[in-house]
Length: 232
Image 1: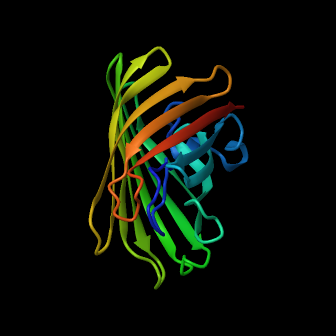
Image 2: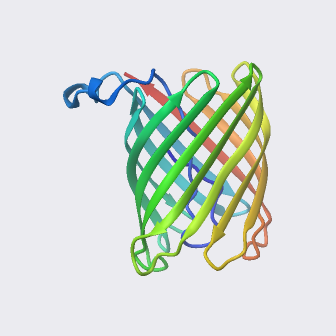
Image 3: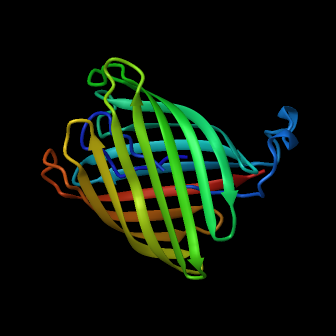
């Protein structure tokens, strides 16, 4: 499960909201023959705008109990013909309680297009979710680009750290994102967010985000993030 804040140059992956169901259960309880029955499939679609499209993002993942596999998707950064990424991976949610969720996944991500250098990455990905009070929720997503080819560059992404007030199925709050590339400056990306339910059709989340980017003259972007869970 991945999500993102919209890149400002080749190599930055926008990724990740997470949905979790089921109780933790030992690995040997999940036989291969019945793993793909009774779980949930989640579909994600996201886009960013600042006068032009800054990114387009699509993802699908399957989860049964604490296991997540497969998890695959696609992202481009406004020009799919110049640079794009596809990935596949999976992982586990070893802790999933009413107040705390931790998820760890690993992806293999392939960049394609004339600006990509055919870069190949391993991506360790981590999610932390907290609900310390009935109307308060927080979450954080962090991942890395670990080079697997000569054209790859090490990168770090704080995709989001956010704190929200929850009222029924609606959420509103503030957050922080950041991006760093090896040898480059750290970019800070604060945002405000509101999530609205779409009864029977998932949720839609809206971000207004400041981009700390010397390459981008439009320092704000709007993100639209849609998620829907398909129950079996």
